[in-house]
Image 1 (tube, rainbow, N blue to C red):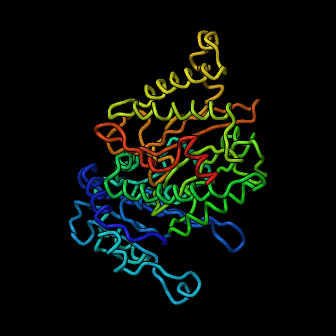
Image 2: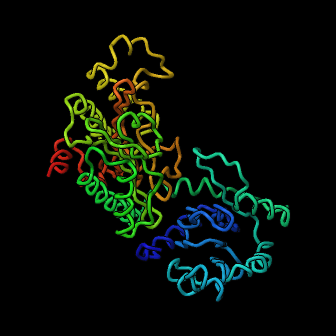
Image 3: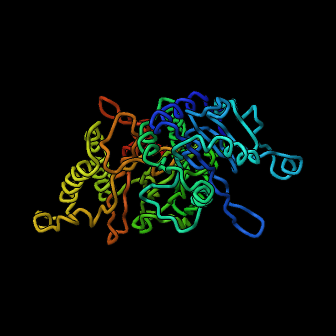
Length: 429
């Protein structure tokens, strides 16, 4: 891993919080993610199952975490199973965790090699009443392949059909949404790296550069500072491309007079930043571009005032819709009649702002959290209003990451340039 070691206190405390939510006499088992083939002899870069990482800090393939707080054998209350290295693996793949390194990383003392999992499970599983198993229940995901968790569930049900099987996901959904101090610090680190990449880009952009050259500047800064890489595929969308919400081609020349919409973020220690900015290719906004930019920025600033503990997701987004409607009327994009005659199921503002204004952020970019759970202190959210005007070849999105506290929000990206004048000043310095 490129990132610095994380205090094992984070993972120990996460396990305590999780175990308190289990039914009595329960085993919980978490699997690492699959390794996905990329070609005949290559795999895609491995990315750990976020729930296993949250509970152990182990960032390696072919790992299993077993938790059994009421285990009659105290040796097996918390157990890690790891892939055993050998001389062949050392030569071809490099470093893998030793048992001692896994203990230091996770705070778990019982560490065994993976080939011992079946035997150890067999000796204790019959004393448990419940088995908690994990699946991906993020409501943005619909699985189309039988990933490792699902295959393991089938195997376990065949071996132990009379146990009571439970879902770990509802517990993880509640726990992961509320970030600890260490998690906030890791997210802040990712935001800081993202800030430096953005400032680097501001000094680099000029008419004639390509979108992929800008992408190269971003990843250079990420890797230079120890980030794993991009938190997600970066969007470098110049001119009309900014009206494609998930534009990833990044292959066009940036033209004088256009605006570039950026959406990128660094991943550091599996925690993610998520930034959007819109800048003029030539270093100066036109009057119209600045007006649209400032309208979006106004919605972002006022959105911060809406985020408080106890606020409901739908209520918040309805209020944001009202803010955006006001700005769109001011820009001449909507009329009072448009609003009066709008379809409540698809309000008029959706023509120019069709996506959500916020999502949870953490180990996943769209982090696991309850859509119907009120916001709480400790939530980290994006705020990302946008206005997209295809007929003008203009799209503006501005996005910061904020931490909800008991007294409002703390902007984790407050030190990243966002005012139009500030952006122009850096670009022309």
